[in-house]
Length: 165
Ligand code: RP5
Image (cartoon, rainbow, N blue to C red; front, side):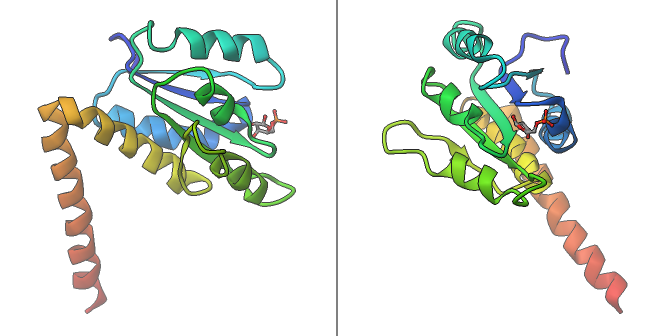
């Protein structure tokens, strides 16, 4: 959704991260949360990253979702330059299956938090949901929409059990 002013940013270190990060965008689409998406690399475009982070709050963003793989410093470096909540998604890497991504995102020193999700697609989905849950603290529409989502999950379990017999 790009026609309203974005309140969530989904950024990623490379276009190769999109296959993972699109799952966060799918959630934001479902909950009709306006968001922007952009490739911003901590090591290839460090100036762009700094500018983005510095301007984020002033630009009306409320939550930043940042995905990266390997030596995944993007979420932490953005978090260092804004006090908006940053959710880090470890993208599965080829060499180490995402262990490198996970450890480099989750192990932030005390003082600069990054809310780190699971590695890969589930992590991106949960990043989208966590962003919606953060926004729901001041948006009743999202409280109702989240309750509906949870009910759907419940119904799917009931349906799976019905299909087992
Ligand atoms: C990181 O390096 C990106 O987040 C990506 O996960 C990884 C590989 O990038 P590409 O070589 O595919 O551009 O910066």
